[in-house]
Image 1 (tube, protein in one colour):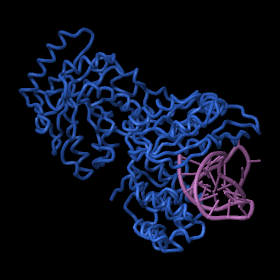
Image 2 (spheres, chains in turn orange, brown):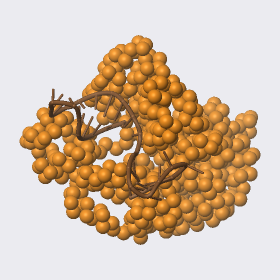
Image 3 (spheres, protein in one colour):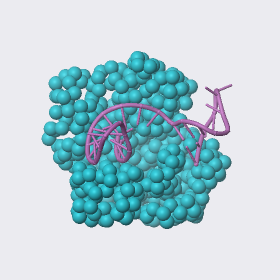
Image 4 (cartoon, helix red, strand yellow):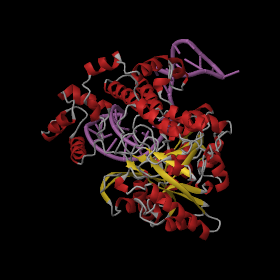
Amino acid sequence: MQVSNAEVAAELDKIADLLDVEAANRFRVRAYRRAARLVGAFGRSVADMRDEELDELPGIGPDLAGKIVTLAHGGHLPLLDELEREVSPGVTALLAIPGLGPKRVHQLHEALGIDTVARLTEAANAGKLHDIPGFGRGLETKIMRALASGAVAQPRTLLSKAEQIAVPLLQNLWQAEGMKQAEIAGSYRRRRETVGDIDIVVAAASNQKVMQRFTSYEAVAEVVERGPTRATVRLRNGLQVDLRVVPEESYGSALCYFTGSKAHNIKLRQIAVEQGLKLNEYGLHKGVRQIAGRTEEELYERLGLRYIPPELREDQGEINVARENRLPQLVSVKDIWGDLHVHTNATDGRASMREMAAAARARGYGYIAITDHSRRLGMAHGLDVKRLARQMEEIDRLNDSLNGFTVLKAIEVDILEDGTLDLPDTILSKLDLVIGAIHSRFDLPQVKQTERILRAMDKRCFNILAHPTGRLINQRPAYAVDMERVMRGALERGCFLELNAQPERLDLNDAHCRLAKSMGLKLAISTDAHAEPELGFMRFGVDQARRGWLEAADVLNTRPVNELLSLLRR
DNA sequence: GCCGTTTTCGGCCCGACTGTTTTCAGTCG
């Protein structure tokens, strides 16, 4: 039995939570959390790794390596059983409630035997909490408010959605008097696929004016916290926004600090300590004297590092690479020459191919591939042989009328359950590009799903595997597939994988991108656009690719059409 | 629980805000 990295990470996190509530050594707790984070973000499946390989990873020692191996093969940990005997497992859910951390959860359990959210609600409503030492009426109401507002376990917000909320908010903030600098920091700036909250950093002449403007913003439902330099609000849609105002000479260090990740920051501060310096959000200090911090660039430089782009700041090896001046030259939207996954109103798109081509051209592209659905997707009015043939003729005519821009004949063909393709080779082999996709039977076991894909790739006309895991963020998990085998299979056969840039897909994820890069497999970044504005999703795909350390050379569609076509030839 | 060109034991990042306090612990990022 193989257990996914995400599940192993969840178990490790559970141990950390339980240890936390047990008041275990906090560094021991941290070791489990670090391990959970590492495993969760790891491209390879830990189930395929040996004990000694895991031991090599930073923060993983012999003990954790053994536990990870056990978990990855469906084994039981005596430690976890023991912890769950001592602390009822439901208490970990209490940690998600704002205002409750390990100490207070422990107290709730000791004093009143509270071990579920339901019991906590009951006790709070009965007014039993404020008698517990260290608790008071204030905390009791705070907890009751949190419980009532459903603040518990809210799913993370899609980056694209966060952008729609944060950008106008920031624009509004700029109207405050005395604004000097401002940026959205946090996981938003690191371009993670989802954000938990929004962090904004500001340098301004008057803290007071900024705070005032921020807390009175029209979308604010509640001011959770408000001090002289920091404020937290909850918006009506439930999203939390933190604002931090600092002096101009601290702006760079504050921006860096609030961009994170937390793990990256800890490493930076360790480096500072090693050099006899101190790093905080106000700057880099030698004794009481500030020696850097006005800009991020200056900060990294003074620490002996090259500037690290926010997308890489995850403590995934970027610091050593920056020290050795080996940072990747990350791909950017400017490098993209065309879009290889585009739908039209021939199937479920909303614009004609002419309109999509014009929109792509207006973005400065040299080509797009028209990839409508195949017949199997009845819902989308998928193309059969006859309609596809007609579309190909139409593309020829369109190309005749275009100068310096190419519309590629292509398709997003369904990979059927047995790994055959939804249209015959005779027509597929006449196309410039064939994208294969799974739209059915997401429930196949891993071995079957993997073989289904490899079998489809066996066809010499097959070029790119679309949205390779099928996940929809917050909606549908990835289907079970051995990604390493799929990538190796693609490499051996001369085909490629897609990084689908739809904000709710972003499929492949960042770890997969790194895995592909380490194997030398190029990826196509494609929008899967169903309307003209969706061509703009390219930047989300590029952001994800940057998080995966990809450079222009690692991406298929960063080259002119002739080079692209020769790469596609099998 | 991890880690080490000062260490195999004794460290492990730093500050703001809140609430319950008489000087600070807990939580959060």
